[in-house]
Length: 466
Image (cartoon, rainbow, N blue to C red):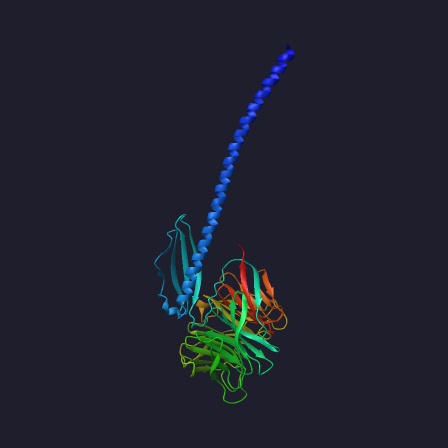
């Protein structure tokens, strides 16, 4: 009996366990199904969110392109001051509003607000606009203020034996490259087209002994020439497949003739910088409203070579190799041009003022390294533009190499180097070149670089951290 009772108890226990297991399995199944559905719902939300973010980016790009197109004939076509455009609706799911705030006479900051009307989220993105006829040429440097993780580059076609690139400028998808060859018969201005991530040569022209810099605005390229017959020239590039020299500007009437080194165009005025000369002034301003007949406005003798020129309101900044490596000229009165401030950083005995770049209210000044690096003698300086004519140094940095371009954007400090270690640098990200950099420009999301060799034209695409 006892055994039978034990068997019955075991049977009862097994029956209870079975029922318990069945109920537990059903409960767990419900939990798994619920959790699975929640995961599916969450996954669907993520997919929908990603799709809407893609749509936001598409709307931003569309609005940005429209803004840039609206300034093709000049930034003056934008309404003055802070404005609010009428809200644009995209299938009632999104709306975009744009505000434009003028920074100065030739640049503005546009802010695009894109609202997702479904979830109520709003994203804002900035677009930096410049006048195509301004001191910034046709450059709209819209690099994002995000961490740069990589540089991706393509290089240009062969410029020819003994020919090396000296300067670069960009107008839309057209790239203009100046060069200096050991052969007087070689071309010294090349026009390329950037299409499908490749550079195609459209044309070339030989202007004389060689060119050292180029600035393009509208239908014309303004170049600094090494010729004794003329230190600057104006080239009609309205037909990019058939450029033509239409004007030659000769600054000195007797020898020794200077060489053209730097040029800057701004609103019908061409500023020309030359090597040090005993026969002419080193910086001259010409009215080129009629590009076929330039007329001199003023000239100023600095007694030193002008390596780079930058304009900010009524002040012209020049980088030089002399003790006063950065000079600020007041040009508000064309009959009374004068240097109002100079900057002589430590190391001027061996280093040279080399390049200037402006990002909104910040001006960057770069120097050569001077043969060997002294960590106390910095090569990169940041100045407060609003403090001009005072030279207010915000910060400086030892680079250990010569600076040949500073296409920085906000907190994102980017610079190119020549002598020493040639490359493009952004924090810990870099790309190195086989030859020293000679010039650097930024347009849109790309950086354009020339180096001192026959293959020295590079288009750099910036990649950011996600």
